Image (cartoon, rainbow, N blue to C red):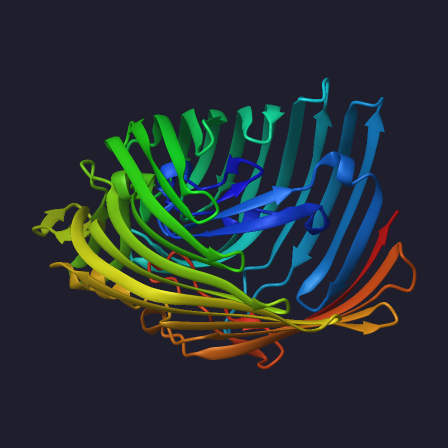
Length: 546
């Protein structure tokens, strides 16, 4: 996942800390959701898709914006943003926002309420008609509630803790781009990102990330479009833990050097296109990695397209998988018996070979749809390997180690469509099916992976302009059961009614998860957090934009 070219994927656990990813929604230009592996351009960890959030340029957000509201779950939120310009060549904006959100439902105790404040800026300087220098920065501070089962090396050997994870950080990015013509441009980008997370009973981490990236696009003759680039990335962490989980060593630095090239050939202009490329990376975790891709595009008409692709992508093991010492559970008390999971220092990257087919069409002006099918072959998936139990002064240890112990296949289909019923009423829908089959001696990990994703998902959205500057939106979502999380299938619905009494003002009432008072959506299988259920929510908001 990226926000304006800044990767927010955490090296700690190979995922995203969603609680600290926040942008002003009115400033979002578009959100790109890229299907399938994207390792050829995006690099390691872009295995099953890419989310790319792009915000508007400062020149498109001039003037003032004030927005705020609250309700039973969204206790209170507010945003203030102002955009201006200095001379004819510099445009800028600054913003501040804050929110406080209630915790989910738990019959014993709900501790996952959270609050956060952030501020930031963005600007562009255009010294010439061909050059643009953009710069931006963001700073945040807050805390996120958590309730967890903590393992301790003495009686009673486990305890329930409720605490707040303190989160803070900041980032700065500068980008210089030059456009020569419609087919030729280059971009140089540099950013620094600092994150801190103080988490009793889990892992506290401070991380400093520096990234330098260059990309160049140009045409070769009349039928070829080439894009290439190179990147250097350095991410250094400092961690602290306890008996339940710690990292050994507590400090480590990740470095990677990479380059990529991609060439698009017009085999027959406006009809057949062939794209080939690869990313090459040398990193301090797994060494050398390559991620090639081959894609064929056929355009039967100006309303249809068909494509096929074969790609390789890799996921690098995170710090926890490589260096953790975890005691997630007590297996017995006479004698004290602890399960221990250790990181695998010799882990290789997880390897994906993906095959894709797709078709997109617009049979009528008011209707379009696309369908995509995929088959993925996974190698070197990370599971665990059991060791020989041994005694220590605190009791009996039953050891396991993270290892590349699993392989598997995944296949599925995705459908999406849009239908404009009238000029004022638009319907959208999407459906996906996924089946995973994981093989290996570690059946617990295999079953956890197979059963952690729903087989079927359905998403429906209706957007209707009722007239009189009134808009009504309805979203329905069906999610199949998730066996490993003991989550039954559910259907949820969100409704929104908005009114613009004047061009600068908007009033809205929003209802979320309206069909049930509460429902579960996940369970933490690692015991790091006691799960809560999503509750019905209603809130109102008012926005002034001038």
